[in-house]
Image (tube, one colour):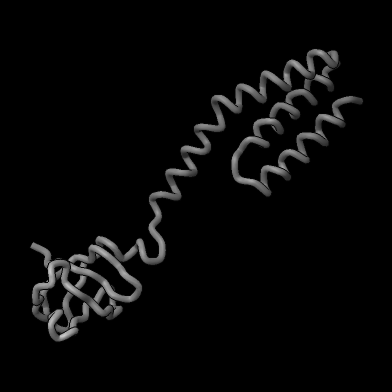
Length: 144
């Protein structure tokens, strides 16, 4: 009958894991699930506790770092919002001239106000690379 308590603990810990983002509660949920199995097979309370501790510890040491690394890797590969434009290529659609306060660059069909990296003049039609985004103004350098 003790296995019900372990199953309830495992379910509660899975719910806690869904509401948090650390994969610590999931390790304990797996420990509780294995303890429920030991209890269902007639294991003593001492064995149930031992299995809970060992499984929780092993999953925390070996499984959690792998899962966290895998999910963290995915999130770093995806650039969003302003980060997505840096490093992209564009074409100067209006001559970039700091003294005239003019300059625009077309990037994937969008037209952005632009300045050159070193303050130089960049003629219309020149291929450029976006190196910085400051609010709505991109800083560019000519592609070579």
